[in-house]
Length: 160
Image (cartoon, rainbow, N blue to C red):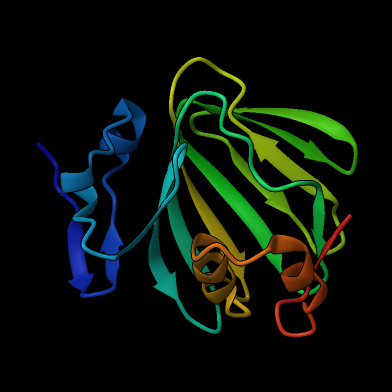
């Protein structure tokens, strides 16, 4: 059985055969990173750097992501590990089953949801990071979304 190769405390390679098998347990990822939990989703902050932020989401059936929004200075990308996500990219629907990579490039109006009757697990990458982890922490702390979105001189995002 293949295992992940640990290159350093923050770097590891996932074996391709495990990706194909859909094997993504919490033990496999060794999720000792920061967890932000809501009723219908759990998210772990895997990396929070100026160059990029990486999050692992585990969302229940029916989970609805953020309202349609635009990032002006960074890519908001997704890799679906298990289940499927339904995206809207600049008004166009995109079905993203496991194994799909979706990138909302700067200026692309986008949203996503779990439209299936099974949970979904996906990686979410923001590059550059632009402290998007801080936005998610504030949101998880119950901060009112609209005023916070309007202050995105720092976070470079706007609600479409």
